[in-house]
Image (tube, rainbow, N blue to C red; front, side):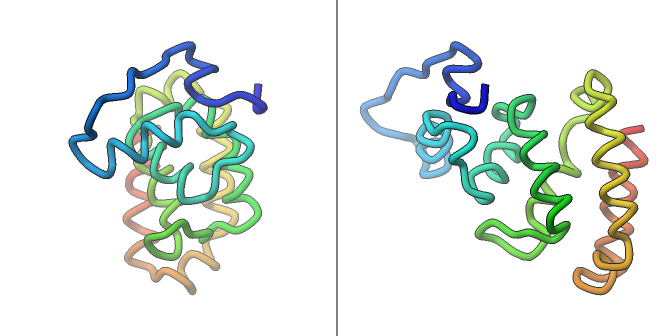
Length: 133
């Protein structure tokens, strides 16, 4: 599974437009073609934030968060954590094992999150998780 790209896993091949409306759309188009095992933190973060291929990326994202809860893509420390915390409740409802795994990773890293990102950010993410329960 992980030796395939999102477009292969979804069996959904987007037609290449002659011109992309935005750089974001262009990057999403390109990232969907990369094998999921070869995606960078930033690429995973961006795809998850755009709700693209979440079911194929969430496991990888959780592994990265387990290794370093405040791992960052190109935006800021903890940006992957922030993106995962914004995954729609509908996804978590269908994937309760992954949700519990995410919740456990988050809770077991409470001290690191507070010391590195601040209590305000910890509370903000905590509220999102509670809202998804």
